[in-house]
Length: 339
Image (tube, rainbow, N blue to C red):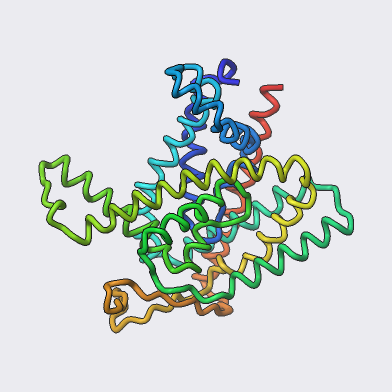
């Protein structure tokens, strides 16, 4: 595969990694959907599945080049490069736009989910009583989860490790948003915003010659949390890829139908017209409990009035749909080029 990739293909692979990283950061959006509609999902799962005992044997024997080829290293390294860059940049950008343009950001995400549903569904023709039942179960689970109340933030390191395993599921399972599950677990802000921003700020300080973060206890706590979260994510990524490879091989129709249902049922999570409710005395501040943890509540959804702002939001919904369809078109074009 690598020998047939041009420089442009490798550049766009990094861009796809950016897309996956951004999608995994967004509640209700799955990075696996980006891989699915862009045409590299199966290669992604195939490559991760090769991170196994044979791969570790190659490392222990010092055969690093063989290890790199065995796991499809160029593909994974370019993809993860994009994801890493995305995680650092999107964290800051997402903070800004969600604070100043929340309605339009969620409208864009809502459109992307709608486009993803169409993209996954249009090529699926194996409808029978099993797949329809799976679809119904997926919709029910999605609706049920979308109306659960988030828990309180928890920085226990064992729990953070578990959150890492769960959060990465969105990369391997299209339609399952790991970031949304982190909201329900109460750790979305801690793990995907605060800890990532703390690492970004630490790098910026170190580059400028400022090492005062060593005396900054809250910063050290966040960096420790991020390290454990990353370890859990790597563990989950490898584990889920092996499980999913088996499920897709033996139960592809049921799995795909469940994914479609789960995405449909979870649309309420990314409904644009909602007000995020925080227990705070000031609009721009969170309420903290006695241990310094942020307290986050659920969303208050509403039906919008028909005005210019609503029309603009609908426009962003359409842009989101078009963006996903364009990504799918590029993926189909790329696959055709390799045939």
